[in-house]
Amino acid sequence: MTVTIDNAPIRELIDAEKLQARIAEMGAELTDAYRGLDPVLVCILKGSMPFFAALGQAMTIPVRYDYLAVASYHGGTKSSGVVKFLADLSTDIVGRHVVLVEDIVDTGRTMAYLLENLKTRQPASLEVVTLLDKPSRREVDVPIGYRGFEIPDEFVIGFGLDYAQYYRNLPYIGVLEQIPEVPKPGA
Ligand code: IMP
Image (spheres, rainbow, N blue to C red):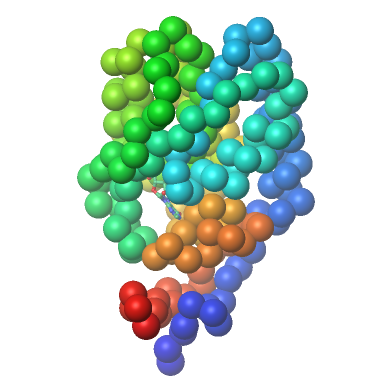
């Protein structure tokens, strides 16, 4: 049987209400931690976009936004282990309090690479905030300051997370019960 992208069975792992409630808590914690520090929130594109937007709105202190893009997965459910910088920050972070906002820390390779790279730019502080953490898959140790949910070793989609660039728009976190057939570009 062929399972296509629009009829692939999805099991809900974290519903929209739980996500929003946890993000509100995290926003309140960050508000307390960064009061008076004029932090820069960095959105790691593409996956962390919905989390980043909700987290920023849950904070009630002045914050600045910046964006960077990396690629570490190449369409499948396994990491290639290779991290590629696709777009860099648009602002200088020297002497700034930087909060890296990530969708998921899996092997840890992406975050380890980013931390090493951004540290050389001499920020006043560098903190990692992740919505999801899959600690059972960790290959590289990463210091996580704030985590939304710890999840088991399953490939998840939704709330920014994709399978072959699809499903980012789901308002919840789910697990694909079957790997679907993906339309070819231009099809
Ligand atoms: P890491 O470098 O292995 O920690 O992977 C980090 C990146 O891989 C994340 O930013 C995601 O883009 C992607 N990734 C890891 N696990 C998943 C998953 O379960 N679903 C979708 N993307 C994932």
